[in-house]
Image (cartoon, rainbow, N blue to C red):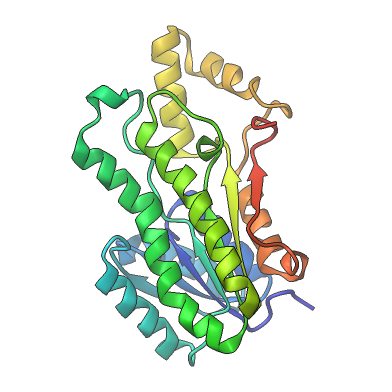
Length: 261
C-alpha cells in the first residue's frame, strides 16, 4: 500500500525543479496535489505529470508573500478537496543576487529575499494549521538550505532567511506537536538545475576556469563528490510525509551529499 494513498498535499513553488520533483514523488505515493505558484502556465506540465500517475492535480495561482492571497488560496484548496489538507510542502523560494556583500545589498532586495523564503512559509503555515489542529493530524515540510546552517559570503539575505526558516520550523513543531502535527525542514545543498548552473558560471568567471572545471571543483567540496538532484530532495520529503516521518518533528534533514558535516 502506498504511504499517502488518498491524502491531499499542497506544494508551493511547484513549477521549480525541486517543487515539481516533490509533487510528482508525492503523487507516486498516492497523494492528490494542490500545485501553487505565480503562473498557471508554468504549473500545468507538473499537473500533467501528476495526473499521468492517476492522481488529482489542481493548479492555483498565488503571491505567497501576500497574506490575503494565501488565506484565499488555502480556503480554495479546502473547497476543492472537501476540507482536507494532510501535508504542506513549502518549496517556493529564491536565492537573490550572487556575490553581493552586506554593504552593497539594498534594503528592498534584502526584504524581497526574506519575504519569498521566510515570510511566505510563515503565511502558508499559519493558514493551514487551524484545520490541521481541528483534525489533529498534519505534516508540514519546509524546504530550507545548507546556507541556513553555514554562513555564505555574498548570500547574506538568503542565508538569513534560511536560518530564520529553521527557527520558525522548530518553534512551530513545539506548538503543533500536541495536536499530532509534525513540522520539519529538508535542507538541500547545491541541486542540479538552473540555480546550480548560475552558481557554476559565477565560479568559473571568478576562478578564470571552464564551466566543467568549476563544476568539478564544486563537486569536490562534497563528501560524495556529486551534486544532489531534485529527486534526492523529493525522496526526503516523501519520507517525512509518510509513515517514516511519524515520530520526527522539528528536525533538519540535510540532503547535500556531505557538505555540512
